[in-house]
Length: 311
Image (cartoon, rainbow, N blue to C red; front, top):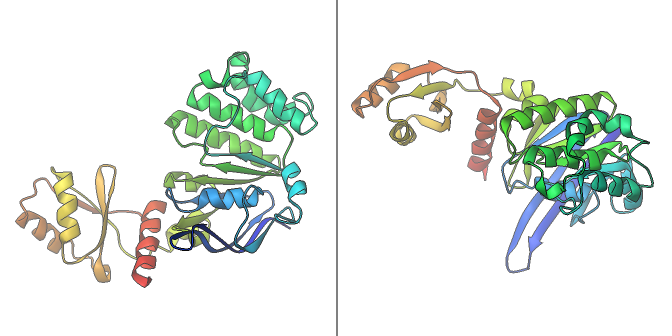
């Protein structure tokens, strides 16, 4: 049984004179118990998709279901079965940690005690601050409190909209460890993120851009489909190097990745010497150029360029 099924969803914002298509004929399924990632930059349509699936927004056309309940006809059943953590911290800032958790439990006619086993591994990390107002918590602590509130009624499907945006690297790592533990309890988890490196934490991912899904597969399979040789290049002047590589006649794409620029050549040309000669003519010093294994971000950029070329 599919935990989530989306069929040809379209969502448009704006007036007749000026419209923006947030979602363009989106279709996919999520298996029960799966940790599924929606990966894409701001404006890709991730939030609109989650709001439709959690019955907070109506699609223009298409159908969708959560736990086999239709998002339009059976929205009340869905609201009782899902947990939703929006991208913006939406808890009551002037209420304490404990008061927020008790309030959300009461909405679903349950209690902290009834489902404490589900949230205890997360709650023990914020329990020392249970009498602190939510607005005074750090970003990482707010994140954990919001997750506890989304889980307190024991949902079967959990929607997390960019939960790690704006938090430090340690909190991001801790959060994904918590999600792995929740998955072991049989909860289906859909998480959206602009961070490409987080794709590796998911069972499957959908790469999204401009309201369209470019690819759906396991992270490993997506990387294996990268069909060009990739080079990592650096020199003493990295900004000028990026400009010169982009202007090189045989460059298909070049993007900055940490200490290196990732370069793909047209026609999958492996002629390293020609590139080095060009950079020497451009008076670059201490040039390093080596083969590189692609990552999810490289695959995303390739798919985006291919879609752009076809449009």
